[in-house]
Length: 253
Ligand code: A2H
Image 1 (spheres, protein in one colour):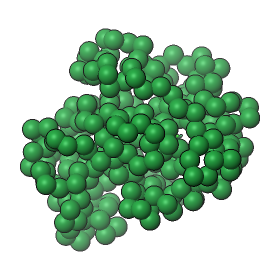
Image 2 (spheres, rainbow, N blue to C red):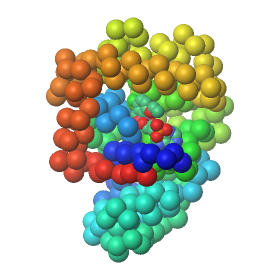
Image 3 (cartoon, rainbow, N blue to C red):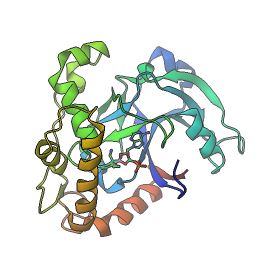
Image 4 (tube, protein in one colour):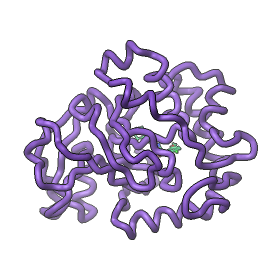
């Protein structure tokens, strides 16, 4: 972990009923995958959520109505940030792994896709954020490559029991223009750097550096409430909107 605290926005991705058998103990509650992001202004372009198949997760009681699915580590941090029914003590209602979550249908705030699905990503770190990532393949190189891998490799889909209809209909949605990289910056940079898969860590770090820097300083929104405005200006406005509407919370670690 770094010395500087990192402040994330947690996006509440609602699990769409009916709940699968593994989650039946949560019947009657609002259940969310809690995704940590640094780019709330990109939520229009969500195509899926990512979990680590071998990762350990839990369904935690946040208050009287809401349950968040995330790592135990993140649940403990949240409990110290006033998000638990018992102060400073997380209550785990169901123990889960990533495998239990693959295929869950979700409704996520601002997303143009009304329903999106939970899919496996092999490079998720369980000691960062919540261990749940929302996927925006237009602007995040990791998301672009992980979705590309699943679309291009039927064997990978088979290995994780991923149905074709959870990925094949989901196209990249242009949401931000960057003069140098166009309307699908992650695809452009991954292609330019000849990145072959989600496992090329060093090249992906370079791709992230390039898109993040240029996106923030030179990007313009193409969609949503603030279309035509600079990403720099839109980011705090979208974040405020999501927080005020109860679709997101602040999380630091
Ligand atoms: B970002 P930082 Cl559009 N493991 O959100 C791996 N990656 C994780 C993670 C984890 N446990 N938790 C969060 N992340 C991702 C959007 C996005 C993100 C865009 C572009 C770039 C980008 C949509 N995915 O991140 O190491 C999340 O993906 C570029 C770094 O704390 C989160 O923001 O800086 C970002 O990494 C946090 O990474």
